[in-house]
Length: 415
Image 1 (cartoon, rainbow, N blue to C red):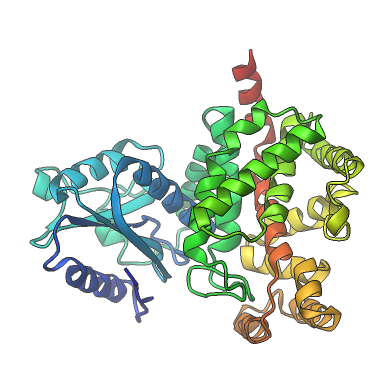
Image 2 (image 1 turned 180 degrees about the horizontal axis):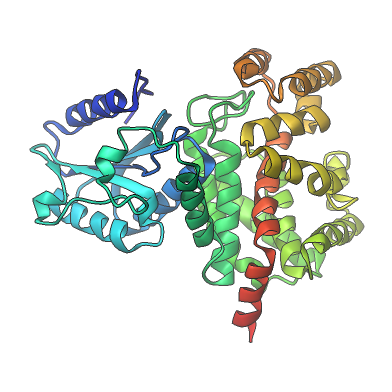
């Protein structure tokens, strides 16, 4: 299913357009169509926290149903998945209603279910309409407007983040990893990287394959606790296993070593740490361990940031994200300060310096971001390493703000 990105003068008109398109998608078809999106009614519905909630439920539904096909769009309503199922629409709606009412992230999503004859609603099942969890008013009516109450956003964010840092230690680290990747890649502009609405300069990767990448990596996170993180051999074997699984899931043979190495080192360092500030020391220790085993010999410059424990990430990138609360401006901040090896190798030093100069001057000028995006896309610039550091930054943001809570849960489960 190829879904066109929608736009409209108002959210209400946009939602009406979507209903019309969905009706055409299911007309004359068997089975059912499930439309999954966020239930956030604020102004910016493309927020990373909303996308994370949608991703999480999508992965769970992937395990629950046998999907015939699926696609997605990312517009003013945020991330939307369109999932075609062979299952009877009535039974699908019944299951989805249970998710909305009982899943810890049920409040954060909105699902519509259709078959060729009708849209199945709660009323169709003899149930009362769904109420928004914060305002206790009709959710469908609330979603047609723009809520500007900052307390509404705070409540949504806190509840989703509360889910991320709750559960088994394997689940928590898996949640943090997915949150980092979703935040780093599911955004309006990629500046040469792929995303939900743009192809990017790497012909072997796109957002659909990215979804498979995240799902494959997510399934392997729990194994980090059985890896001897003091053994270079065991760490390297784990990273190679994860990379091999990603390659099988995305059906290509390009290297995923950098992104797996950088993110898994953060996971191992968090496990070994005795405080948030100690994570950087653990990163440095793991870097020394792997360097002593010649793991980075082929690309020493690319992994040099690990030698000082990713100090730049801890002292500059994470605080910038926490202060400015913008994933895209944080990416530009990283691009302005970091020598991205992918740009350097594929585009040259002059292109890297140009990207750094433009990024520095446009960090706080969102109306000019599209110009930088066009410059990067037209020059086939691919800020892969910068984007990976954005993923790491988002992971560490969660780890820093919830460090004690997570570690207390870990300690309790280890007893």
